[in-house]
Length: 68
Image 1: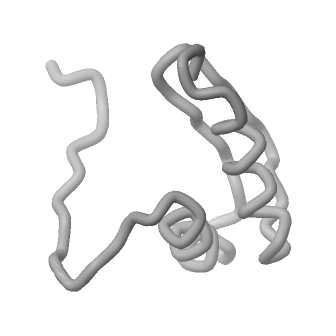
Image 2 (image 1 turned 180 degrees about the vertical axis):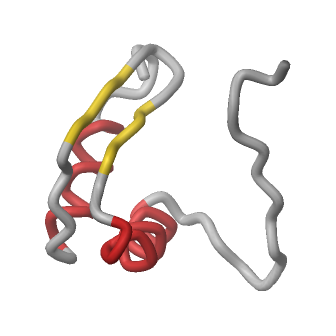
């Protein structure tokens, strides 16, 4: 995030705009992690995709974890 100022602000503003409450947030130079209620997950994902111009018709597979 160091080379892209405002990313965290955009992230948080997108969630706030749709009423998603961030229960916990952690940031690093390459990652933003948040904890929100599972009932708000779908609208959070849609809001973030719209805010960052992600999305499209293709389904993406995202692998999460430590990679071990």
